[in-house]
Image (cartoon, rainbow, N blue to C red; front, side):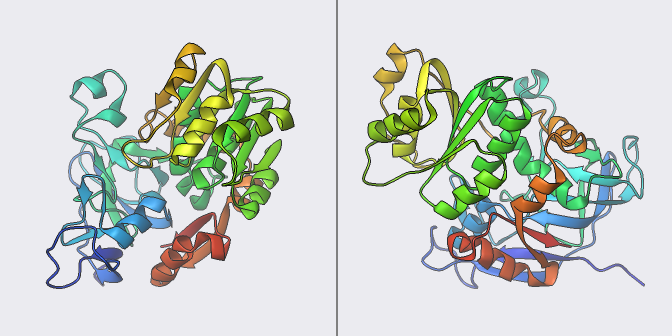
Amino acid sequence: MALQNRGLMVRRHPGDDGPLPQKTPLLLQMEDIPMPAAGPGEAVIKMERVGICGSDVHYWQHGYIGDFIVGESCLMGHESAGVVHEVGDGVTNVKVGDRVAIEPGVPCRRCFHCKTGHYNLCPDMAFCATPPIHGNCSTYYKHAADFLFKLPDHVTSEQAALLEPLSVGVHACGRAGVAMGSNVLIMGAGPIGLVCLLVAKASGAATVTIVDLIEQRLEMAKKLGADFCITSSTSETPEQLAARIEKTVGHQADQTTECTGAAPCVSTAIYGTRSGGTVVLVGLGRPKVEIPIVNASVREVDIRGIFRYCNAYPVALQLVASGKITAEQLDLFVTHRYKLADAATAFETTLNAVQTNSIKVMIEC
């Protein structure tokens, strides 16, 4: 019997070829899609788990992120793991039957950035579920074999799918310089703020303080190991909030990861970081924001950006495989699970994260 492949597609409404953002969300539906075949250097994976990212929901709701615009349609999903179903010529790192995590971005491997180890900055990066590149929330999916990572027997497919957001945390903490004994501040307790928390603690941080407006997110942060959980208020200025954080914790942060993208939080991150410390901008907000740049400059607070991650998947896998980030923590992190046939409901759950009290929503393929 021939194998069938189905996937979760966002699709523009019939006859809709107008400018984006549009007033109504794109169509979100399960569709029959072609069965992939492995070419040289490629592998076909029978998908097992796919996590939903905020970017997936944004494409569904708005049809674009920055310069990446959904044309007619795009298959969603990029936080994923599965079992190798077929390999193409020249593939030696994995074989049929291997359980693998899938690093979703495949660079050109030839440009300056690729050759100097910063392949996340490759201008020709093909990244899953970033139009026009299709994602992998499907039954079967084809990917470059050298961006597949074989899993130890004790690492589950769900844990492997979480390596994608964990890799963001690895890259962010690496750019920040988080190390043993660090005092870390995290602005925002959404999924990315929480993975930064997990990685910072696994890296030996002495204290991790996390700040958010939403109490239920801070409750999860406490369960995941945060030392201080501080509820922010829209009535406070960034300076006032930073002063309250310092008074509560007893010191300013050595390193801060800003995971919201909101301008007041970026300012709080700068004010809340010690002189000579580092602020890493992880969250993406408006293209232009006003921040206290002179305060940062005269105190030699370094401000760094990140874009996704590079060379982080092996580190994330080791943190999970070794138990530095525990199975119990990852199980808490995944708050909702759905079958592939119910993927649309999974997206609704993620869209209404505050009301559904969801952190990471996982789809079983």
